[in-house]
Length: 437
Ligand SMILES: [Zn+2]
Image (cartoon, rainbow, N blue to C red):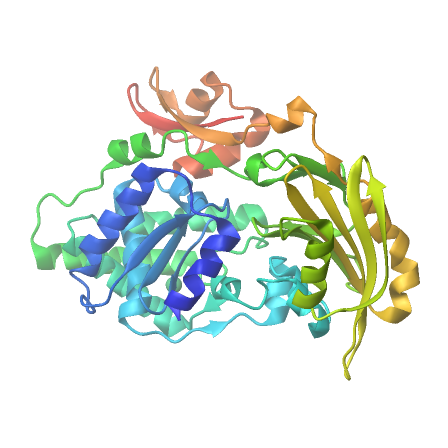
């Protein structure tokens, strides 16, 4: 299962581009796998390029952490606890249920799936590996994984008390997001309960291994994540005032007002508020526009109704109306294949034949706004990063953050990132995380 879905997961998120961090997770992962209950399995450990706070395991030995969760750990021991938990799902052979479509829709990550099923094929990844993000284990499985997480992390000499502490961070994140965020938290039992359970287990294991120097490794961890990208990364594309910008591929287009937009490295999906139409932008095969148009028709099993050649914003294009005929429910598409530099792009609007006329202008509005991005400010937009700073004088976390220019409205967020309260004392020389915006 893991082997099949790994390419989809990596395609969907991209690997986080930091060799040191990837090396760290791989080393700790293999070290822990070697003391686990299934040491002969071949494991892979990866950090994916997502701002969401999450870690997940896929049966078969595949474990993923997001850069979002890496940014939220404050020491190696917290990381090791969660790593042990995820390996635990694999070693205990937990069978997972995928989240229902309703839950996926709530999370908003699988735009295609919330539409009528006949649209689902257009949302390429909705039905494939990404569903694995929403694997849901039962409460008993989660408790067992917590137990194994404590055991495994203690066995590679980390203080599992820190794992208990990380549940506080999860709890605070959950409180802040109003429960909207799709992460580790929502797929797991109540963090507060788990914190108490894990703290007790950690004590038991500490006695069992009789180690006097279980590691926490706070400073080394913080130094390792210094500069980690935090939040959305504009280089993957971003939206400002209903315009989607892609600073790397250098294009832009208007998104319809009020539509939900989901951006992945593979495609940009847009879904109408009433869920009755969707549009997507994806790379089309390179080469001639005619060949690209042919390939798209074939790929989506579409029957051409009409097509014409033309020009949008100085770019050659082919516009097509094409139907997908099915006994259950036919659909009609408007497709623009646009040549931009060396790349061909396809924008595909999808809806039911009976609704096509009412959506055609909305589709066209976006398609005809597609053009080369030249605005340097958009091209050079930088992500926020976390910087590790040294506290200059004894005081509270709030004072230290303020000294480093943290604005009032981001204080709570920065406090969660640091894993302590704003009023908690910090001493001169201590390292803290500061959001560099
Ligand atoms: Zn779990």
